[in-house]
Image (cartoon, rainbow, N blue to C red; front, side):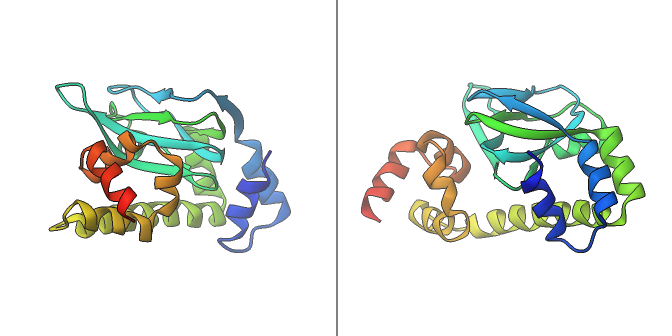
Length: 189
C-alpha cells in the first residue's frame, strides 16, 4: 500500500528506515469511486493526497456551468487544492478523482509536522512546490500564441498520458479548445 509513496520519497534522497516508517504512519488509505469530489468549491482544504492508483483533477466551473480543468495528477504524485491547503481559506476550485482511485491522504497538521521534523520530507515538499510551479509556467507560456493544433502537440510532448487517460471533454477544457476540435486534431495525428 505504501510502496509507491516510499519509492517517491526515496527517489528524492536518503531517508532512514525509521524516518520512512514515521512518514508512512501519518498517511491513511482512501479508496474513491470515479468522479468523486474530494474538495468542493468554497470548502477549506484539509488534506494532501498521494496517488497510488488513479487520477485527480483540479477544476473550476464557469458561471454558465462549464468545467475548466486546471491540473491532472496521476500515479506517483501528490495533489491538493494547494492555495486553500496552505492558507486555510476556502478553495476556488474542485478536487475530483476521475477514475476509481487509491489514495494516501495526510492531514494538513500532520503534513506540516513532517515538513518541520523530517528534513527529507521538507525536501519532498519543496520539490512538489517547484514542480507545480514549473508545470504551470510551461503550460501558461506554452499556450501563449498557440493555435489548437500546437496546444495538442504541446500536450503530447509534455503530458502524453493525459490524452490517453482523460476524456476529450476534460482534456479540451484543459487546453482551452472545444472537444470537437480536439477530436478533429487527434484524428489527424
